[in-house]
Amino acid sequence: MSDPQALPSTGVAPDWQAVRREFPALDHLTYLNIAQKAAVPRKVEAAIAEWMADVHATGGATAFSMSPIEDTRRAVANTFGMPHGSVALIKNTSEGMNIVAQGFPWRPGDNVVISSMEHENNTFPWRHLKARGVEVRIAEPDEQGRVTLASYEPLVDARTRVLAVGWVVYGNGYRADLPALAAFCKSRGVRLVVDGIQAVGILATPIQELGVDVLVAGGHKAQLSLAGAGFLYATPEMIELLQPPYAAKFSFESNDRTLAEPKLAADAHRFEYGNPNFLGCWVQKRSAEWIASLGLANIEARVKALTTRLIDGAEARQIRVRTPRPWSERAGIVSFDVGNRADALVASLQARNILVSQKDGHLRASLHFYNDEADVDRFLDAVAELGGGRG
Image (cartoon, rainbow, N blue to C red; front, side, top):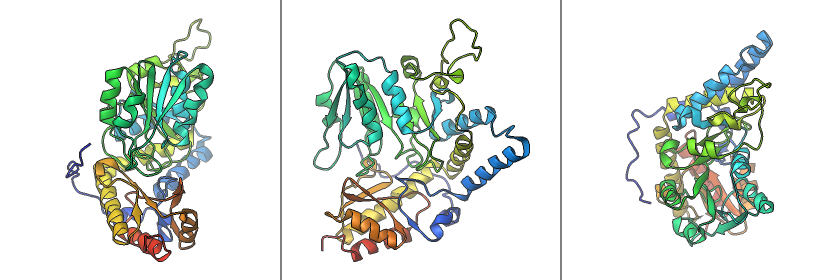
């Protein structure tokens, strides 16, 4: 996968310092932890208050209506580049992966291929299929921490039905070459299923253009929404192929429960059932619209600049970087090898109001558009001072 010299034209970039002021947590925190949970903007707080005001004033005539749910579907689809009918509003990544794992027409002897670097949400749903005679095959990364097509290809055979990958790996931040994997899967009759939570809201490529069969993402990270409000994207062919593991009135073409043979909805509504997360979807719409107003190309360019500064600064301070350097192979996550000190460093940094994570024994910083150069330098200086470098 090549490293593009320049991102697509972004037009006029936002005033990032003004945008930053929309996040109250940043007044006192150096928040480099978007890969775990979002620092939410005031717009989320305002949306919650708006929703509650309707509940108080009208008993929720609008807040509990299905019409705003469809508005959310359109906003999410428009912002992230998907047809409206291909989007199901679901709780989180785990639910989306389980919809696919449990709804796929498996046969005993089939297999699914994943990697050892996948998050639990893209591991356990597939391992749970063992009782149905489905084998899980696990690819290993190369010496640079990349899980490329070369890693997966030897494991794929005539009984492989699904290749499940993270668009951006939660641990070391490696970004998969989804178009290349999609072309390979298509040539082999394999379905490409993607955990997109660490990429959606940061990377600008429209999801429909990736060539994937399914992509799922919870909303509580780079989408700046709430836990419990995510989405599932599926192509029309996959929608038809998958049989929902659960069903209720919103899963069908008609809500008439007296029909002798009710038909599942022809679009992604079939994966929704019962009352939706009304508050979560209310916020999800407004967060998606704000991201669209900032421009995903602008956001990607901003995150690229900040993470490049982070990598360059770490190398200058003799802090070992695990994340690939080419932009085409990373996104908002940068991982560091600090020996066996990751847990201690996370705690020491937290004491300085610098929030990062420890993942798989390594220090992980993750950035979004609301971060700035001072955040990067403050983190790096603290890590160096606390002994996280080679020296």
